[in-house]
Amino acid sequence: MQLHIMFRYSLLLVVLLGMGDMAAGDWPMFRGPGGRSVGGDDDLPQEWSISEGTNVAWTADLPGRGVSGPIVVDGKVFVTASSGPQRDRLHVLAFNSETGKQLWHRQFWATGKSMCHETSANAAPTPASDGERIFAFYSSNDLIALDLDGNLQWIRGLELDYPGAGNALGMSSSPVVVGDVVVVQSEAQGNSFVAAIDRATGETLWDLKRPEASNWCSPIAVDAEYTIDKQPAVILQSGEGIGLHRADNGETLLQIATECESIPSLTFDKYLYAPSNGIQVYDILSAGLEDKDKPVWQESKLQPGSPSPVVVDDQIFVINRSGVLTCGSTASKEVKWKVRLGGRFWATPVLVGKHLYCINADGKSFVVSLNEDGSKGEIVGENEFGEEILGSPAVADDGLFVRSHAHLWKIAK
Image 1 (cartoon, rainbow, N blue to C red):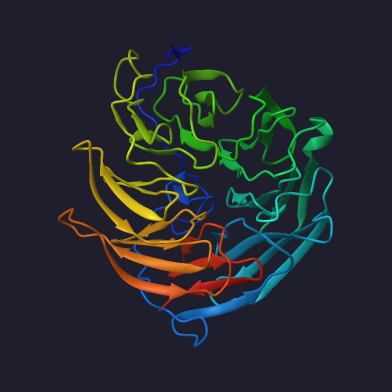
Image 2: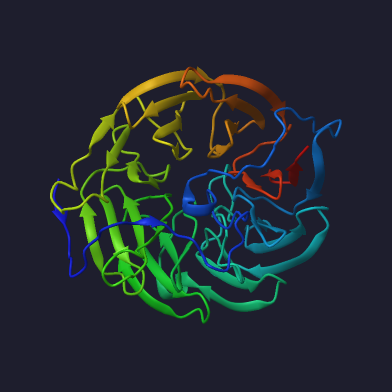
């Protein structure tokens, strides 16, 4: 591996992006604040019943199909969907997070490739928000900006700018807000790109040519508050490696050449956790620039399937393709325990307090209690949604928000 660092800047510390106008309890993007799938201190139930309504605050109907996750901003839940024989009808819906009342529903026509694999949907990427706007991105490479009341701010059909982008299986990389831009990543066999769009005007500020291979990973935002020139940055992942880029102009700050997985996204929490040969852990924050391309720990037994890794307090949790949840420790550099859950998983689990909420593709949820002494986790709740669940859940406003193709639920005491 080789490390390429273009430093007129000294990367002293990188911390997770925190939007100044975003409420502390919001869930503004894929995997929530900082892209770590870690909620706050919400007191969530371990058991619920969809059929009997136990610990179900409300249920709302959704149109068409969608495997995107919901986001929660300023007391509103936003979710996307797609419908029609050609899957070219694009939907953005808003609900009151307390009551479940539908606040508005906007619809648009897709401009790019709208068909995808039968298990997915055009509405596959999870939307993102800067606290003032919602950025809804679709497999068709359509990017729509609305304010929180549903008023259109701008719209971009990005396949018009990048002809041939996308593929027949569909795209699912979720957008991320970093600094003054929203970054979208679209990588497939033809005309792959990453573009940074001015979040206020919809203008493309910079773009990068990307490897022409299928990649469904999502970018990660970081705040370079403590770099010399104090510029936020974005981390990109592909089968060819990992890159840290300035958000204002796309300039490469750091490049690590390691072959990453194409579905689970990397996670950043003090260390960079890359789904590569299991999990590779990189220390990109310590003083000095040497050896940042070499993992400080690599563990092949921590092999994620489709869900992305969840990291908190030097513990890393992954769910593999066989439905086994595995916990590893960055501090001791060892696998601590495993618990068999069962089923196929697409949704990334969420950690709330001392409980990990995992939902498989058949709609069965497993609530795993994490023991403070580090001993093996214990399944303390099993619940059935009764519908296919592929989108990752959100945690906010004392509730767990889960979507299927047809429904959106708030699970709460």
